[in-house]
Length: 277
Image (cartoon, rainbow, N blue to C red; front, side, top):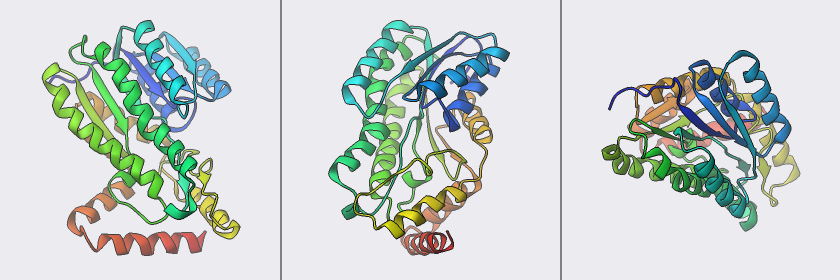
């Protein structure tokens, strides 16, 4: 498959109001892609579109939707497919996190994480796949996580969603390659976004532990612009998978070389980080 051509393509990016999504939107515009941006944060989304519009002469459309709402997600998927038949790139970037062990997270909280991180990915991919397949050379991106490779304690809901995204993407890749559509699964490590700061906390998490969970935001150090550059480089080169950040590389190596004992190391490291916070 030839390299992906950004120039004059149209990219749909979810979770585009901040963090990696905003950086991806800026990077795509710099490469000449027209943009369709989606987020639940209307003000942030408008700000990103305005900033990009001042410097890049590309078309920008924005849509406000809450991907935790299954019906909203279905409707926005249909709207995007109808309104943007020129779409050549879909980046399923939106995500939410939650802290707490399985028994500390309510069923409703667990389902919210699955709704945004997994079900919205599936719904929007299903809606836009017929559009992508009409453009040979199109591309699909899903954001899993380093926690789609390793599963630390206290992240059961998040890991469930991100491991599922990884499996969905890897299987779909084999199905779409014959149609000329590339597929990339992204596993970011500690990128400096608001995902930890804005994370939900399990209703059963004690207040003292909830305060420590908030401190994990300090462990996210990689600039979102650097993450976006790595992701877009992988898209251009049709890489099936990209690990973003040194921590993601280290954890993936540990999981591969130490498939059993890495779990003990990861658990110890998680507890140590929480105590330091």
